[in-house]
Image (tube, rainbow, N blue to C red; front, side):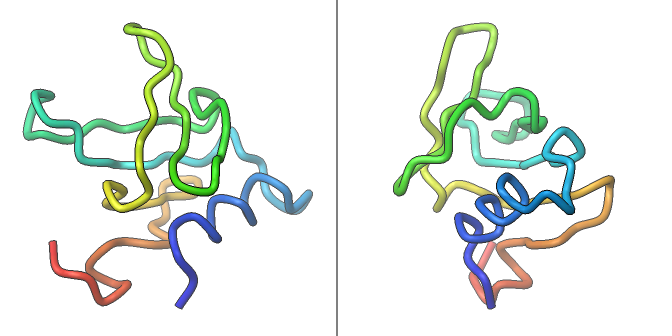
Length: 87
């Protein structure tokens, strides 16, 4: 099974995908239901340990272990549960 980081790199660099169709649900303590969603256009950088997300508060670093689900065009490609990790 591919990691969330590996999948995001594939979606970003593979010309067969449009990264603007990507959305990432992640743990965001203090947000409603402690989760937020980053759309592809908000993801500024994919570092080895975290992704940088542009928000209204500026750029925020989201560690990959906080990712809950990755969707492409509304279809779930990866989720923490499907990857064998507890929710």
